[in-house]
Length: 151
Image 1 (spheres, rainbow, N blue to C red):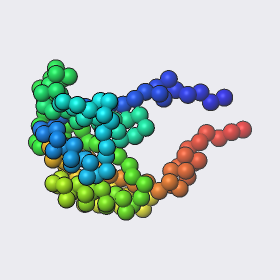
Image 2: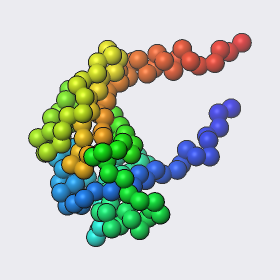
Image 3: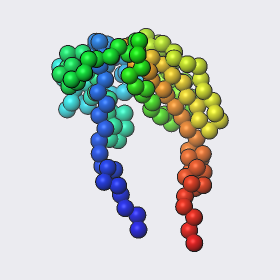
């Protein structure tokens, strides 16, 4: 019998401070992201990145209301690294090239491991992002080889 973990239905909201909300919204729109109008308004924009995963772009004032700690500067300190997957190797390059054309800067060169390909960039505020593709066949192979043996 298979059971579903209690956390399977949880939603994830990552709150990210940005210096200029409208500029950041335009930047991520050029990368193909949209915004959920139910959670987008003055000081905040909700950017869906998965079925139940969202990045909340928050202007500095709004972010400060949520955090009791001082806001770090992503241009000088790594606060977190954000990674999202795309459906093909070519899409990795397309998204990163769009980020660079929209004012982002390349963080690292491409990483090609055959079954996985990625590139990284810094957004307009200096947050580090990685765009990655993994070969679906390699994921199936990995899950099959790691499945428990049955008697």
